[in-house]
Length: 216
Image (cartoon, rainbow, N blue to C red; front, side):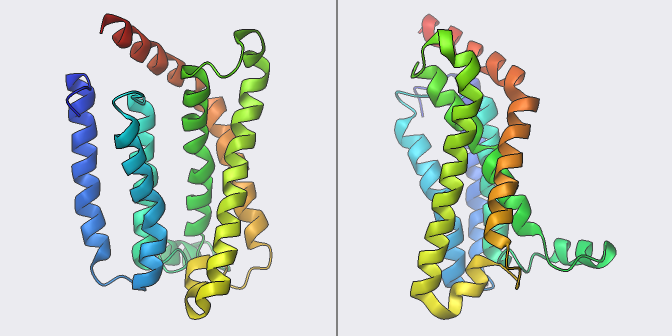
């Protein structure tokens, strides 16, 4: 990562180190080893891809931090499975919920964080014309993010069909017949809310990256 500016390099290495420690801890006596592997795989692949493309495409610090948070959410869910996270068992008792809702946090994050990755790629690579990006950019970012959520649900379905006994732990439906639809709805809400709350901050981060790239 020597091609990164010093501050960004320190941030990336620090977050990578913290995640590595948490990943190792998560791998110790998980609820289900196979489910653990399935759940952490997206995080590991995502980090690997970010490292692979970083010489030519450095993500903003904002997106890097958000990806780190998303990876932590996935890793916690992988260790306990999404239906058995202890904190959300306690919340279920306190608020008299019918199920452990940690999976909804995961699917909310599945929209809240990737939508900015999509936005950053579209803006940095100038995929849209500046004349139309103002109007189409939010719609396209949400649509692409939601499509990945749908793909993930299809992958869950395929894995459930192939693995049999591990299906319930991986899917985390907990008997809720509308689990798939509610998962995608959480992703939709997360992606929209992210754009509403973080667009201005994201734009500032993008300008800083552009300024650094011009200097180099």
